[in-house]
Amino acid sequence: MLNIKIEKTTTPKEKPAKGQKLGFGKIFTDHMFVMDYTEGQGWHDARIVPFQDLVMSPAAMVFHYGQEMFEGLKAYKGVDGKVRLFRPDMNAKRTNDTNDRLCIPQLPVEDFVEAVKAVVKVDEDWIPTEDGTSLYIRPFIIATDEFLGVAPSKTYKFIIILAPSGAYYESGLAPVGIWIEDEYVRAVKGGMGFAKTGGNYAASLIAQVKAHDDGYSQVLWLDGVERKYIEEVGAMNIFFKIDGKIVTPMLNGSILPGVTRNSVIALCKKMGYEVEERRISAQELIEAQKSGKLEECFGTGTAAVISPVGKLRYVDDVMIINNNEIGEVSQKLYDTLTGIQWGKREDDMGWTVEV
Ligand SMILES: *Cc1c(COP(=O)(O)O)cnc(C)c1O
Image (tube, rainbow, N blue to C red):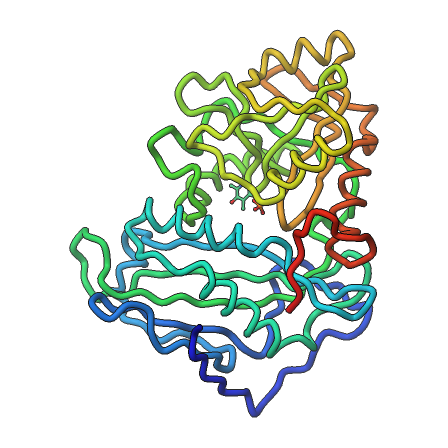
């Protein structure tokens, strides 16, 4: 149990008006969770304080060598008025996998979940209730030693901020166009691809800009060695329906193990689909599309939940999938997952946690 001190704001901000467009990650609540780590002492001084700027040395290690990690999950205000989290223990476990890779100290799973629950509880009134909206939760850890040497920091801050958010894609659950990137790579085996850390995103920006300039909304990465095999989208894992089977790249060390990915695999199996986790080459997709077997494609991630893909570009090939319409499996998965998250459907998987 954390002994969390709570200091409430005396100047609460105005909450977004009903019906106001929230966007994603632009509006923040009144409070944040902070906890410090000091070598020899461990994690200490868990507290919830008014949302505020950080005061840090410009020599803090995070600014120079990127020793940091982050997570992303959501709190949902159910149709029954209850507040639910979706599998927060998986985010907590993944935090520790990321921490290991980045030489950041472990954070007990139960402390992570307790901290998330506590700060969501304090700002519960900020959770939007319109269809498709939620409270996005962003836990992160930064290295704070004032030191320009290259070594793991001896001090850290674990912070959680909260952002009331609308549907991730402005167009809602509409098919997106995706650019299969053949020049830049995001991650390699032995690198940080499986870890949720800012460096992976810094490495991806250049391709994202290029894809946007060409009218595509996201980048789909190929493996960093042969540049042949499908890995994942910028912030989503990727699934295909090929000849009736659900196929997704296997976790190989350079792919982020998504909570949504894991949940989608379980749901597809429950729906009776055969699910294959394996290598998929871009060439296989082109051939499947030519023979009419590439039936569906969708991305999975906390932010968008399910994001149908209607168009895939690879070098000189532009594949239009399912007539650029939302596929049957994509729609079913979206309805099932969001139904569980908003308490509209029975959670027979035991995935939700009440705050
Ligand atoms: C967070 C993330 C995902 C999706 O993971 P979820 O747990 O489903 O939200 C996929 N890819 C990358 C690179 C990510 O950072």
